[in-house]
Length: 193
Image (tube, rainbow, N blue to C red):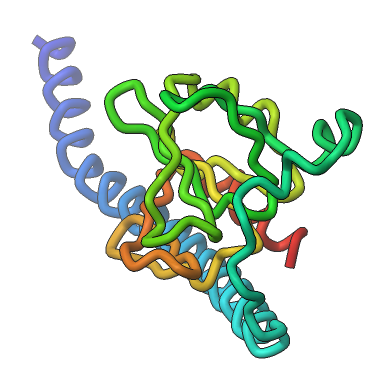
């Protein structure tokens, strides 16, 4: 009887203390989440300020140059400055600095280039993983499983509820940054800017 009474008092004691522990744990988690959000917002503000200052320092846009500039380079320069892709029209060499971003839709990669009329993308069947491996990591960053962007075309970063959107020069719609890639994207942006 004393043994049962002791167990009952332990259970009652636990039931009295458990809500306090749960509330305390909840508030501690909220505190650290709030600190992380403040830190993220501070990083975001810093990056956007650097992007704004870079935007004001930019030189006037050059006229659209022909797409075949890459064809004029020799092989060693091509490897350093160009991406070679197979398209339905044949093999194309595209200069890195003309690639705004690469997007994947249903197993096709679409390269959006700054020198294409109406920004009609170049289509290729190559996997994004292979294209990204051939791009310079100091200039390109993967922001989502289906998007790689050229950091020199980034105009602004905005927080959108629990996610982030990336705005690019010459592109109307923002691109989403996946939450698990954000920790890789922010340091690259801070380093580049």
